[in-house]
Amino acid sequence: MKEDISLSVIKRLPRYYRFLEMLKVNGIARISSKELAERMGLTASQIRHDFNCFGGFGQQGYGYNVEVLYKEIGDILGLNDGDTMIIVGAGNLGRALASHDTFEKRGFKLVGLFDSDEKIIGTEINGIKVQGADNLEKFVRSNRVDIAILTVPKAAVQPTAELLAAAGVKGLMNFAYTELDLPEDIAVSNVHLSDPLMYLSYRIKNK
Amino acid sequence: MKEDISLSVIKRLPRYYRFLEMLKVNGIARISSKELAERMGLTASQIRHDFNCFGGFGQQGYGYNVEVLYKEIGDILGLNDGDTMIIVGAGNLGRALASHDTFEKRGFKLVGLFDSDEKIIGTEINGIKVQGADNLEKFVRSNRVDIAILTVPKAAVQPTAELLAAAGVKGLMNFAYTELDLPEDIAVSNVHLSDPLMYLSYRIKNK
DNA sequence: TAGATTGTTAATCGATTAACAATC
DNA sequence: TAGATTGTTAATCGATTAACAATC
Image (cartoon, rainbow over all chains, first blue to last red; front, side, top):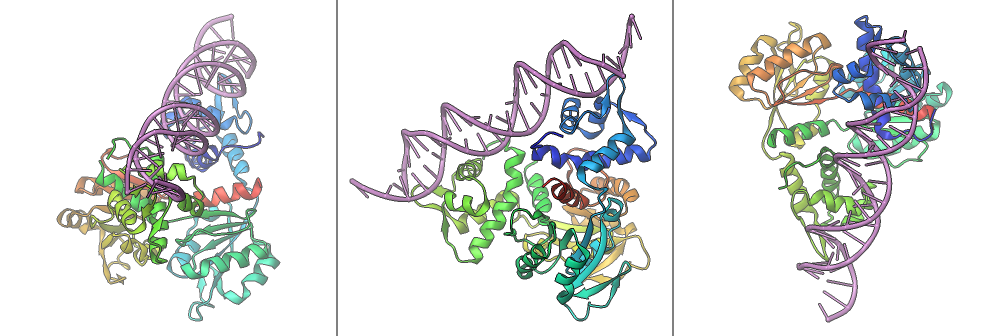
């Protein structure tokens, strides 16, 4: 595998993965870069270029085997590593995400739910009991949690993130409208749900 | 305003907007491109370049007035147009989004909630009653709904989107793992919640 | 073998950065 | 006026696309 895969390529991988899954479900065994390009609205050239960042998965004159390619991209993304995940903040959004079954389908295993509200602690969502925030650090350490989804109030985000980072979490998915300041070996994805809405607003105004 | 603002520039606008809001809240009245760049992790050059796509909001020797710039970017994004919004699909995620108060803060007014489940219809979330899916088309037409958030099951997405488009909705925020095929004057934002998780997984694997 | 389609290099295009004159 | 910082053009960098030889 080449060093220094560009961010643009990496960001396209999940979308490739979804399309290949769809093809697989529809029983399509092989596909050429040309046809995949048409379906995805990309160029065949870009697709071949992208895949070749990770090595040649295709075969001249034939195209790509859907099953193989799907598996390969999953491996590249690390979806077969059995990453464990917790959700910190069991409010409306946290609870909705806990019931979101796509995460598990993609190989992320939800192992814990945390909140600091006494009324929520002890309730069960999707078979998992909500624990108090005071258990958080110990739980993360002893269970070697890989990823934490942060759905806590804005003010709690930075301290919670620091605690999680110190306890050994490797990646954070942050839903609050703050950008985190953390050691750079912690991977962070900020999900700002208003952003796509603002983008729509712009498009509506300027069409 | 220039024609053809590039997508890269537009996609940065919501983030500028959030940072300016933060500065405003913190009582900062003016800022130079240099300082904003440091805070945001961009280059000063890019910031000035971006803002100048829409006209000069700054003043030589002084910088940018935070309040003015904030207002301007809000206007560019169309956040002051009073866009109305409905949520179609009042499951876990739909209900969580209905209670998400940032949307309203950004100028999006939630006016309706819809579902097809008899058990959910009639319940109230955030002061809004869930209506049956059979009211959807009529409601959209008579209330001139601008934006619809789609949190319906995968199989229902495409037909629902078509119905909404025909009824005059201008923008769709789609949370299902399908990409929509619609007339191109309808703006669409696909929100794939697993994508940031897959990205984290990649980063964790390849750090 | 002939046809198809990849892998890969080179050409193009667009986005970011640097530089500096304009000007507050 | 002097200093600071924008607005804007030109230079650079990176990403996408085109082209074609390699090969299944």
